[in-house]
Length: 338
Image (cartoon, rainbow, N blue to C red; front, side, top):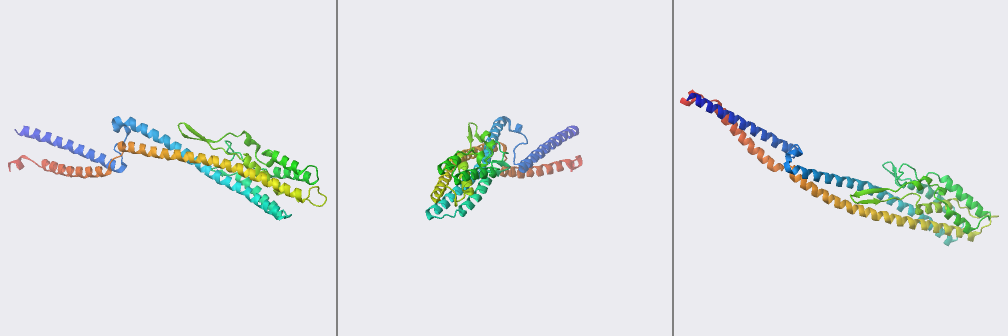
């Protein structure tokens, strides 16, 4: 009988020890869930849900990549748009100054030439606008500086003006020649003509081209107008043109500048519409990503409130079990008889 009771006590003790180990293991896992906020250490713990969670994560990662692409592209477009607006503003200032001079009968064009010289420098800097080390108006060749040679523009304009002053060419020929100048004739990097487009992948089926190069017609015309005005010299004694011809040249400069501003504003509106398109797609991506996050989080994430309650309940069970084990370990035949 003693042996049977001993075996019974041993079995009971082993069972209790095993139960304590199970409770301790469960408590450790619950504490891990509290610290990591995850139900399981690995995807394998999700069982049959693991594949669907992996697919959801992959889909969300893809959306995150598209969102990053859009963020980068819209940052560039925003800066490009601001730059183009400023360039258009230079043209408007020149037109305004010329109109005031012509209408006011002012033969002193020093203010116009000073404004134009400053405008040339500003426009050159604008063409060379950079973000994160890349030239925004260089097309796909983002390391190529779009504008670097104002000396060429000045030399070409001075040659035209000299021919106009000495009567070698008329006012109409002067403006026709200036209009015919190529991008490189006004100092723009000729390599831009071979530079490709700039586009961004915004979803699985949509790629948006937001290319604006410094050799576009708008910037070219504004630079032509500024360069011609910067180098313009009023006819003096012995020169062929008179004050009327001088005003005609100024009007032609204003026409070139305004045409450049109009073309640049139109291109600015085009990339503005692409900015809006990408922003709309971005909003959709964010909503979809949030949905994916909710779906896989429901499978992966632990409810910390529920976990805390389980921990408290389990701690109570462990304390009770330890007390039972402690009492049982002190039992003996003497205790039993007494």
